[in-house]
Image (tube, rainbow, N blue to C red):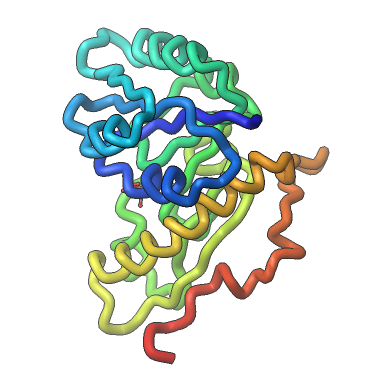
Length: 213
Ligand code: GRF
């Protein structure tokens, strides 16, 4: 059975969506870098192994990443899913889990890597925004794209309303990819592009229609 460890920093709603979707990807543990991450008690209450590796108790990024990597490897996962994990990872960490490290980012990459994606999307005047699930590489928010979900940006949107519309799609997108990973359906070609069921999947299921239409 394909196994995964999920890393979170806060509420962990994407983690919850993956767990509740009950795909055939076995979630072995949920690890947070903050002791107050609300997702930790949620996961523990569902019988999942949980652990906190508090980044503030380490002198360097390298030391934190090494301890985090060991905590992950204790579960020997096939995949490590970053779900709202708000730490920049060292190249050593990314290399150790190369091809097995997956992230969800709240924009249609390569647009808007980094923070404050919803505000930047509104300021840029884009008409479509969304979320991307991708493999993690050393360059922040630039790895091979596995799947994306698009939503409209409305004239009336605020950062919060747009974030909520995107988040609803994140909660569909990440469990879908988790199922693909479990089924061994995600591969990266020599050209660095991901081969996934997305192209044969009903792609329109990933484009959220405007509410009320
Ligand atoms: C999500 O929008 C995720 O894409 C971003 O941070 C948010 C985390 O939400 N990186 P949650 O912790 O999964 O609820």
